[in-house]
Image (cartoon, rainbow, N blue to C red; front, side):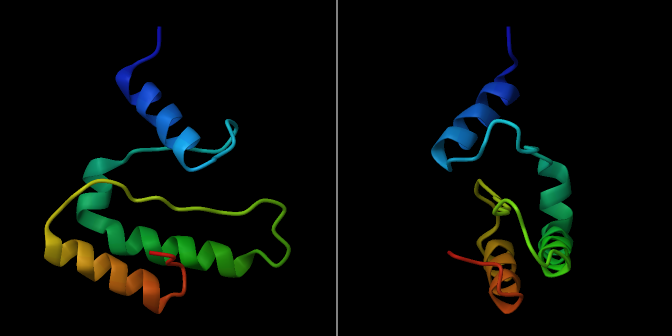
Length: 84
């Protein structure tokens, strides 16, 4: 039987059309404290790939402090990795 986290990851994958073999993680404590670094690392990884075979997605889901969420959205937009 699968855990609630595994079930949640499958539901997220289905909702956002993420292939089953894609890496999926929910590092809540990490995102709460270092979401900006996660976004910057994702932007650097995208910049390093010159001919991607697959599309890349970074999903940061959930709710948080509105000021922190706005900061993350602003940073993602500045790095051109935001569609929201």
